[in-house]
Amino acid sequence: MSENYTRLLPALKERLPASELADHGRTTGFIQRLRTIGASDFVWAVVMSRFATGIPGFDQARRIYAQLSGRDIWQRPFQKRFLSEAAVKLFAAAFEGAVAPWRKRRRIDHPLAKHFSDIVAIDSTVVQLNDRLRRKFPGHMRAAAELKATLAISVFGLVPLMARITARKIHDTKLFPDLSLFRRGALLLFDAAYVAYDRLGEIARAGRYFVAPMRIDGAPRVLKVHSGPEKVRAKVAAASRPARKNAPAGVPLRDLLNRGARVATTWDLDVLVFPGNAKTPRRKENAVRLRLVIRPGRGRSYFYLTNLTTAWKPEAIAELYRLRWQIELVFKELKQHLSLESIPTKNPHAVHVFVWASLLALTVSRTVSAVVTPLGKLNGLAPKQAVALASKAIRTSLSLFVWLLSNAAAVPDALILQMLEVVSRMSERRSQPRPDSFCRLIPLLPA
Image 1: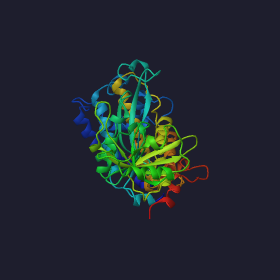
Image 2: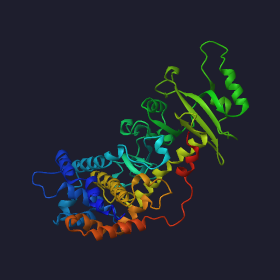
Image 3: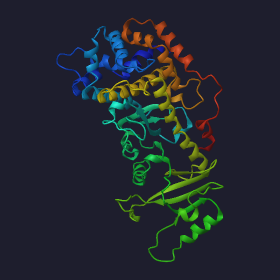
Image 4: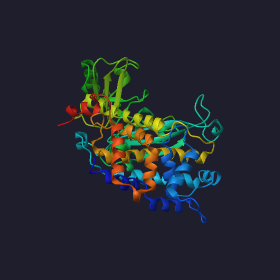
């Protein structure tokens, strides 16, 4: 680590460069003609304030801004800068600039990287808001006001790749990221809320892979049985010789397995699924051929749809999907250590600013982690350092980090080294790592 400590300040400045933030400030209209608040210092102040304890809000950001800029702004003028669409656009542009380099090819130290250019987990989390925002952000069930943050992360190092902030009521199927954001050969992991059969076809045609659960109303037709009970094999084989012309291909899965029934052994099937809904009829010419793996579980069966070939064993498909859980750990980190749990404002624009600032704080945390240990090696439980604990370590030494940013030219190298050693110690796992999916997948990889 002593060889890398001098990279800390350049790495942080590169993640949110002052010149780029100033350009975004002018483009969005955040920087006004008679400006008193600079875009770069403002973004850094709000982002670093998300590491603060308690309920970080306007006052913490204003104090950090005074440290970074050397100018003390009155409370009202400072707070007003949160209350515009320009501020929201500034932070959204800053996040896009921060994560764009991670979408490019990165060095990844794991055997899985030989099979996939990246492994991306996609999901959303709900953020509670002040009840007075119910008209702008209506909640669900008993919650008065909520919004939804959709996030895509690389499971290699848990770095964010994209984010979107929307109202809670928008369904997940409408929030799936643009496939062009992810490299060809990437594996996408997402839950049943994002599954739409036309989208699964698009993913396959775009040269990306996926593993996702099948929706309960999936209604696939089984074309081929790679593994499964003998009676299922016989029934599918008989259906391959249709009794009448133009008969639909395959056997409906419901004829082989009753709804709610559990399998005793693993089934590995080739199936046809048919995009469509109540408004768009399902047509056989639009059918998508996929692979369906059904595995027995405790009290239930697990259904996995994928476009991976049979070179990947059913056990490997299940382990790959378990990697999706990494994004749940990121949401936990955002809410516990980066202040996404509570948004201290009644203004809709300020809500967006604070949420984007928490997401940007995640990029700062990952940047610090990468200086301590290369992100390519921070995969699963094997490394000594846990990236999620770096956010907690930065929170503990927040005043030192702010001082470091405000006195970059005068910071002694010894102090930077000492800070990184503190982060390293606090990021260490206290218990012996147990085998996880990253480890269990290695013997299951195709030859």
